[in-house]
Length: 84
Image (cartoon, rainbow, N blue to C red; front, side, top):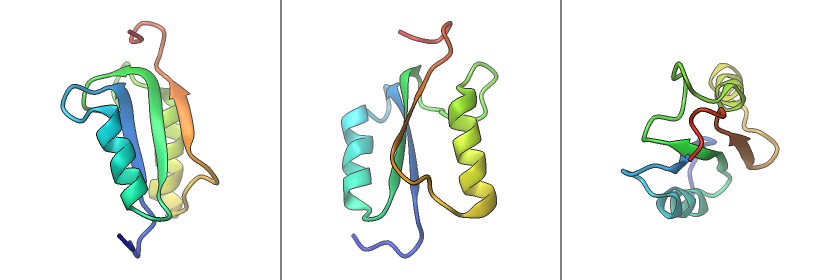
């Protein structure tokens, strides 16, 4: 798929509604996209959760405020209390 707008795909490693392989497949389908994976992250919501990943929030905020993608795919760690 040739997307005209840069896309940041965000994905928790342990998302029960969208498994990691599905997020990776979308990333491969959207040429020029970047993927932000939260290693050890659980659940469907990745961003701006009270117990979420500050690393993921920072990367997403940068994308949302500038429209620019990270230079490469990113992996952030889930906070210690959330990791599986």
